[in-house]
Length: 251
Ligand code: F6R
Image (cartoon, rainbow, N blue to C red):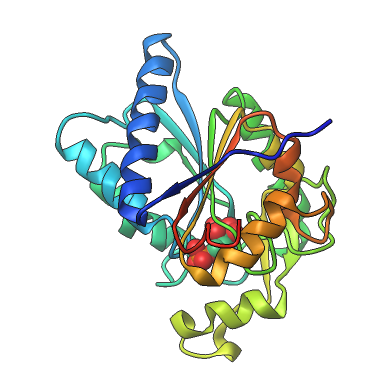
């Protein structure tokens, strides 16, 4: 028996992000109080922007410290140097890390410039680092129009691990405006696998806007299948969807 993950529908993204950020403060505080670092899995893209803005606000207000936080990002484009403005390394610095007190050595993001012959070892080392940190306490997710979490495009197995992935044409199309054209969008990425993500103890998936309504419904209520990797969240005991009214409108 599986039970669909709860979907919490908020008036707007700001309200959803305030709620989730307050919950994350509690979680980080409780974990740090037990004298260990909190391990967070982080996402990029448009969706988490208001969430990161809220985390920065809470940090500036003295309510959240990242001094004892370790982070692992979901993914990175292959072929983009860390300094490229569209790399997820740049994104994370710009949108969060440059504004909070996280020690640089606590940040982990796959290396988009890893040489092909070192790629498998790099991915295995990423998995090892997550395990060595004690596993992910809290994983933040967005959802792509293909139903991907991380860059686990349709066909990604339930037990997949960090690896190279070919991006779906829809995913590349969605990224084209920020890259200034489809031909500029990388064709491949490194992504945590579905299995890696599902091992996180707590998961929050965020989605905003009517463009996500159909895939959100499919993920929450459709068959559990590798056609929609977010559907695997139905089998996770502690995954919650945080939606604005539009993204939740098909439920
Ligand atoms: C990003 C990631 C992706 C995005 C998804 C939604 O690290 O892994 O799964 O969360 O593509 O992207 P946005 O938020 O731009 O709609």
